[in-house]
Amino acid sequence: MSAGPLPWVNTATPLGRRNPTMKLAVLFVVSFALLFVFDPLTPALLYPLALAAVLIWGRPSPRMLLLAHIPFLGFALGMLMINAITRPGEELFTVLGLQASVEGVTLGASLALRTFVLGVLSIGFVFSTDAVALTDSLHQQARLGPRLCHAILAGYQMLQDMPGTWQTIRQAQSVRAPAPAPGVRRPGIREFGHAAFSLLVVSLRRGERMAQSMESRGLGLAPRTVWKPIRVERTDWIMAFGVLTVLVVVLGLGVTGGWIRGYSALWG
Amino acid sequence: MHSTTPPSTTPVPARGRFSFDLKDLVLIVVLGVVFGFLYWALVQASAGLTLLMGPFGDLSSHLLFGGWLIVAPIAVAIIRRPGAGILAEVIAGGVEVVFLGSTAGPMLFLVAAIQGLGSELPFALRRYRSFSWGVYACSGLLGAGLAFAVSAFRFGWYGQDFFVIRLVVQLLSGLILGGLLARRTVNALAKTGVVDNYAIGRDLPTTGGA
View 1 (cartoon, each protein chain N blue to C red):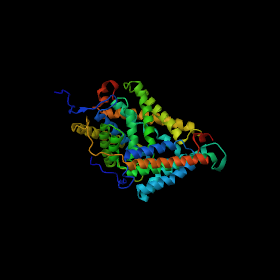
View 2: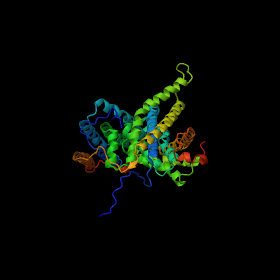
View 3: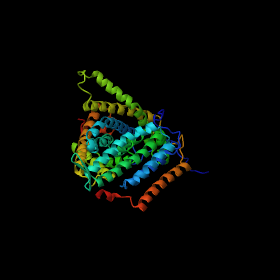
View 4: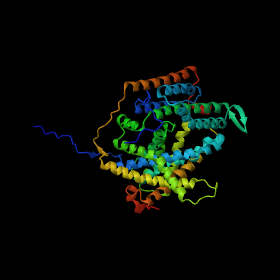
């Protein structure tokens, strides 16, 4: 595949050299463990640790790191506000007739901070992992079927052309559309739907051609060999062990200190 | 003289019970990629809606929720094999996480698999032979319902005042976007002829393209 890595990906870092499947597995374990934590202090302790790890070993540009925070900053704020005003409990303050409760703010803060922890870890993963290497690694380490991997790589290449295709379709639409009076009408949901359907049809047609040419080159057949073997090295295990140790220590601190709260926190 | 047969060097298509043709797999991936891209574009465009709703912005995600579901019924209707819907959802989720850099994290894979299961179940119960409005509607409702149960646990919606509103809005969105819009899209696709070479094309005269 000639598809290159995406512009924000940098694999020339300690984190970038780690095995992609291993990184994904570690991320999955941390996400799953945090699902059962509902106090604000535990994620508040984990966030600086995660941020430091990503900064030291992933070396993203600070600007990109900050920009990548924006989507889940909004999500976290929404989560905090909705929980603050929709949970019964001791009154903290009242704004515009909406009553915020202590319990609500505590829980909202916990969920918002969890978003930050998982967000920064996901950024670390996305910024350090090349999609083609991930697919190769999933094939070799996670036993993902070869044909599925071929299909995914084809899809990846198509995705890289997609913004261009989308723009072409929108431009073709606006050329043919009746000229609106100045400042009257912006393209609405209807135009979006039409463009989306065109994109779908164009892509399906292109996909069928791709599948035919892949099949004619024997890509759907077995047995297969691997061109670039990807190994799990000792460093990968050290990374996984390190992350899990930090997680267990922070959770353990919460248990000893008595501040950790489980799912029962939802009912006060 | 030993008479062991040498290992066959003739390549054969590797097929199991749940394995798909390369062509079907590419179609599923293409659907996942296109809808992953469209949803991403839609999210960019609708950020204003979230801002507009202020403290209730968190609720706005339920309005568009059905958009997540639509890929599963389309894949099932075109390919008509077990597992197509779940696979399509998981791949669409994977596109979001890995290729488009979504920060929702890998739990998205799990949620995608569960909502794909919900969307596919009604078709599976009719043995992938009935594609009426009713089955699509059930598919949208079930997908939205299952996903709701998981998300409610993840984000702690239980015990909130808005629990019922959330559930109703999400179910309606699933019904309309994930069910009825899916059927419209499938029928429109069948009319264009791009899916004639898939399972849907073979059954076209009986199930009706319009």
